[in-house]
Image (cartoon, rainbow, N blue to C red; front, side):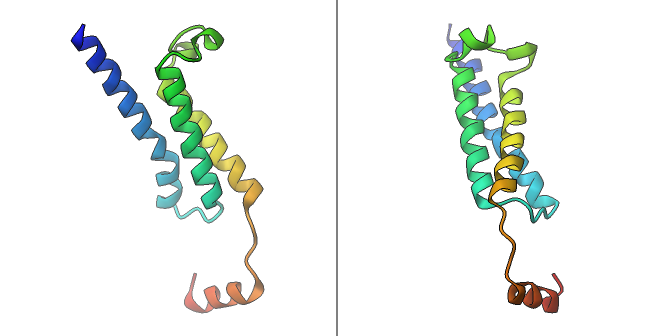
Length: 108
């Protein structure tokens, strides 16, 4: 029916929107270890997994639309946070000495 489709589309839209939360949390708490590569990878993986689970593309692997009895967007959010930390750890570079000195003079 029309109500069922409306609820499914609303849940999918909310699930995709929530995938920005790990990035926002890292920004709010001033985490300098997060890199732009990590942010891009995590959002792409989170939205991709939300769409794949929400549209039922991975139902045969997980046994249904809600893996482990958890809402699919929350599963994607957990994977999103893991990807953010992992990719940021792999792509982190250390600033040069003159940049660290300039930041120290400014008070960062």
